[in-house]
Image (cartoon, rainbow, N blue to C red):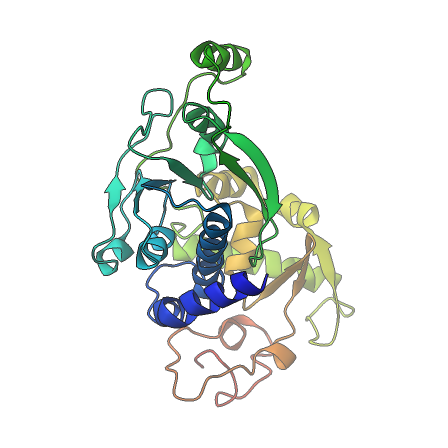
Length: 316
């Protein structure tokens, strides 16, 4: 554990902090950058303890390529494969990142002696099949990373070597599998966050849902800031007509995603929807930050915004 902490701090201080400060991906650098720092440190320590260093590793489904970059900075030779190139790859100068659709039944990756699969999605169940052709003994371990899925499997070549009928064993496994053929995802990812809905539709639907809370309010006329009226997602869904539901489905997001996008107005906790208490939560203005989005409460709430123009984090 002490050695792991030392290696992790080395990677984080040398490269991780600078990368996190200049991160250009949409993902959260505090999670994704330092998680890859932790995984890189784990692998380095594991290899050192086993007295083994890969001649060439392959990170299958390498995504942003950061793990490959960090391992290469630690003098470990290898490359990454992903079906879609990321913009941030251009920052990782000298890192071997390949845009390629991998077919695990046909691509043997015989130039690699260590396979890495981290968040490999549809390739995940195929990695043991690919690794089997290299030969492996399986060990289970737990990672020290900021994630709820911390378990990993480490596979090494058995001392006795491979079984002679390896390909027959693999064929039998694939024959019994419910999905014996691999289907890669689309190269161009579809946007699944309701952002393609028209502004008019978003505003009309927001107003309709907001009016539902008017009906629940004590005087049937307004929604008081201190009241804690709430509805389940099902109750909100029942307010919508079939055309509105169809538009949400076609936006690849759904009702919950739509409500989360209207985060100034609505708050969702464990499937329960309520009006956000803007009087308490809206004063989060960052000094010097330009406010570009209009305050929904100022424009549409019957009582206006409970905060002054100076205090509200949205534009009045």
